Amino acid sequence: MRDDKSLITMATGSLAADETIIRALAVDSTIGGYVQLNVEGPRLASVPVTLTGNDYLGNVVNRTVDTNYPGDPYSGKFEFLNVLPSDATGYTLSCPLPAHLI
Image: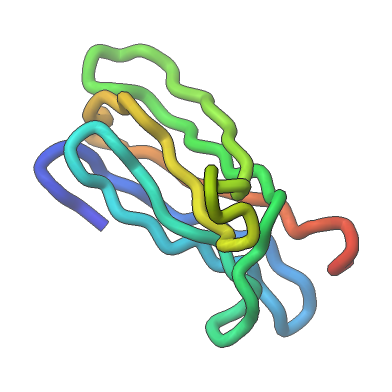
């Protein structure tokens, strides 16, 4: 996914035929989205999502949030605020499979 500010690569965990899927959008200085189990599965709450890479100034970015969105804790939503544009390599979003699904 590419916009004027950043390039985001989605990294997923895998379990047999199931995958965690991260759907995200970068708007201004916010990267947000949700995590779900496979294409038609439920959204996953209480899952850590990590944003890694370098911003355009060369600073290392390594931030983690949980999918416990305020006011809607079971939605699987996450949000990274105040994210500077990435360098040419882009950012990576990743999340592990929850232990109860392994």
